[in-house]
Image 1 (cartoon, rainbow over the protein chains, first blue to last red):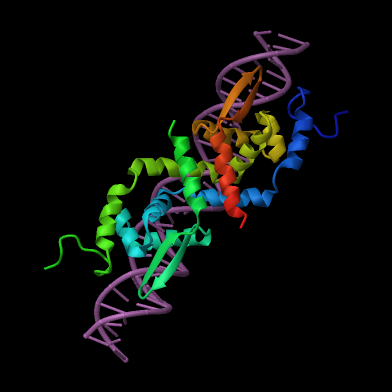
Image 2 (image 1 turned 90 degrees about the vertical axis):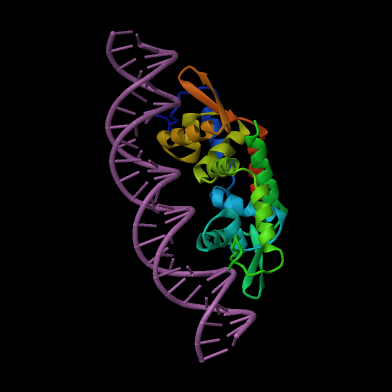
Length: 119
Length: 119
DNA sequence: CTTTCATATGAATATCTGTTCATATGTTAT
DNA sequence: ATAACATATGAACAGATATTCATATGAAAG
């Protein structure tokens, strides 16, 4: 007869207890999913470049495209993603749409990432 | 006759100059690419869960798998990614391999992400 | 040395993601 | 109204990625 809740590791120190405790203490599934989704947005070099460009000043779509050497369409698609995740906001002025960083979290998250790289 | 460097936007404020300045001031292509690669690692809920589990204590592979309700193989593959990006370190003890967070950047990056979500 | 257990790895597959192409929307100027 | 321009959007395709399955490695126990 085996124990009701079989552990894969043999009885080695506190593992089974640890596992149970962890299961309870982990943030809810959905929150962790959302967090991953957020980082996924930073996980593309095109979007990173756009964000970096916006560090300096607000920019219209075609200037971003020029700066990155990409098509307007590609940039527009990525701005959509950034917008949906509240990383950028926009302001319409005639034919142009000016994008800018939505808040300082963006800068801080990117800075933390850069720090990690510098090692 | 057109200007040598054609801008997409008409002469609207300082755009052409801005674009040129930005092109120079942006961090090198490769660095931005590496940064995106780093965030890509955080951009998966399985890996986020693993990191969160390791916030509390070091864990062996199979306990992580138990905690997340995933197969050992899947976890092992993701630990490989985390290891390659220096987000976790490991310690071998007999048959087991114990993983733990590599440094505090991991915590800080995740915390910043959580802060952004809480709005 | 053979078996068992914990972990790692390679190949295959299904899903997701970014860019491109074509086109739509909406604004300004003629 | 119509033409020209900036931006957005949908469909399609190519490349990337996570999980699964089968199997390999490597350590401890019998």
